[in-house]
Image (tube, rainbow, N blue to C red):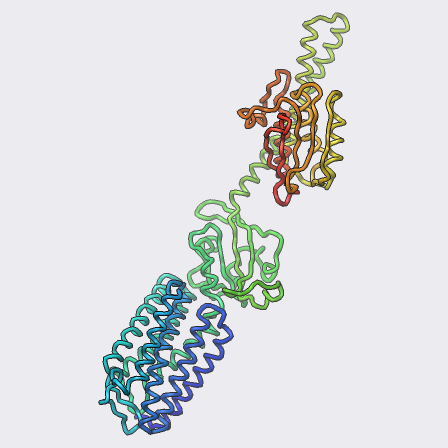
Length: 565
């Protein structure tokens, strides 16, 4: 047995502890489960102070009033805990307006039942009595059982949510779920045990012990397990089956969660949660803190994953509280609760880069063969042909000369094509109009005209861009007929530029073929001119389209991707 004064002091201390929890929770009210946890602290404090008053003042009326206050706040405490579970586990259906109205309607119904109990005594019957120690020994009525049933129902549903969270998540999330489980079930459970006389301690409200333990667990969850700071906010972004390796790091550089791909990449043991990020990254010297927090240059690592060499590129971002409003970089740093390390799988990109590098190397070798091994014999043949034609010029020798000229043109075009396919290393800003006139001056277009309607500037490799324009102009002159007019202008919104002519145009069925190597409608053509155009445009990061000009001729559009204009 506990004396009334001792019981009152103990219960008052528990009430003060609950107020501390409520006060600390208030600063987290904008975060998931923050407001329900605050309400848990407030209702628990009222519960404890009410029982302390009943123990301290041994008056039946005070005891009855205190008991009814306990019943009333027990309903709010149950609902507050339940919605802490709902927000933590993400069961949003329970947060809809209609469902909330039903739940809080049950709370209001219980309050009405308590207030009107003297009239009907269906909540606590008249047979209830107050002991000599000032404690109420209630005889439950039908309505008390009804209200106990819906509260117990919410507790069971909430326990199910918390249990599933603990069972399906791991480490910190599992620990937090267990804490949330106990912080809610203990106050309600101990109250029910006392209500139905399963456990009784003369002179003391046993239900308050559950409040004390629940408050202590809540404090631990706040400051040791970062209950409202980190998980499950970060967990929502950690998709277990994604190819990218993801780690969530708190502000103390501790690992708080990771996905399966990160476990494979860094060979993370099961007990790594809580360890420092330097320990996890120990096999990769390039991943050193705190430099990674502010990194802007790409950090790449390679690793053997399931027998395959894979490449990853690091992206570090801030983790802010859920619902945090848009803010400045400075304010974001103040609100930040951790870092998200995303190692993006760039294996396919790296393989493409390796393929392009190998292709460029082959193109260099090909260009070397074309420029030396083919040009030298051709020059010899051309020289001896010139000697022979000086002695006697015949139609047969003229045919050989034309064949030599075609071979010379093919060699020049092949060299341009090989050069066009290489990546662009450096670009400069030029006026498109100036480059257009420069390209026009280098081709034979005596009976054609050029019109330039643009003030656009482009970032290009000048020599290779001139090759593009020259080939488009030459194609228009050769296929457009006598007196063709060529126009260079801007695409809408400066998305790029176009080159249009007044010639015969390109049939729709041929527009996808004109950029293929060797395709030509001219028997004397090499079929490489427009292939060079496409290669140069692609090397600049542009898309090339063929359509019909306003005059019915050909129109080549060069769409400049974002970041290349």
